Image (tube, rainbow, N blue to C red; front, side, top):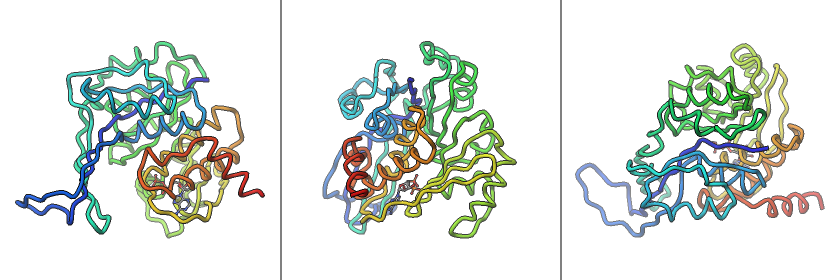
Length: 303
Ligand code: ADP
């Protein structure tokens, strides 16, 4: 079973600064770091770490080839990546001494895909394979239609959320991954905290009757909502240092478990265990655990 991931590849330029730069100010930074980022790349690393046969569909500028090493080392298949003259997607990230951040995003190569190029990306896909996508590449609606027509099962994580997501063909999805904020934005609803999951399940059944919706609930765990029924798993009680990448880690481990014919309960548990390891480390892609680490963590929890 192949999982295709039509996903962003970003370069994160991270500047540590005494405070976030003010209008008109020129500010010296304490340090500078360049790392691979993008929700697409992170989710491919999580899938590969989880043991998936994942093929990344994405674009980057040839000058940035070295940044793909992390994806390659994780074991993602990069044979269908394409280069383009457009600059690679990137983020200029300031992080100040209080850990506050400010981010400028440039979609670049991630937005260079045209609708007529998408079928070619899936030329080798077999009916029953999976396509995962996020909201950081162009032609999202076309890619969902193209994959469904080719007989693929489609999983979508509408992050970062935009108003346009509500117009996408979400009813064609097999699985929709959302966090607490995204599900409320999608349903244009206000909900008490913690979320009233049964009320959400009723609304989701009306809006997306044939789509399995997986909601990540931060420190409260995750749940699966389908046909009005809710299945929940609690998060692990851990000392969370940095939750960046937790959702991406969860999605990679959950989807690999489902693609491997595991139950929803097992997939929720694996997703939460992997994400619990992720939140105990600083960083995004570098804090996505290996399958061996997740197995070790679960064995320790049972002992
Ligand atoms: P996102 O990063 O997309 O907003 P969430 O914040 O919902 O996603 O987190 C994704 C998953 O990470 C959760 O379902 C949970 O399993 C795990 N997680 C997040 N925060 C914590 C935490 N403080 N303690 C333990 N697990 C956590």
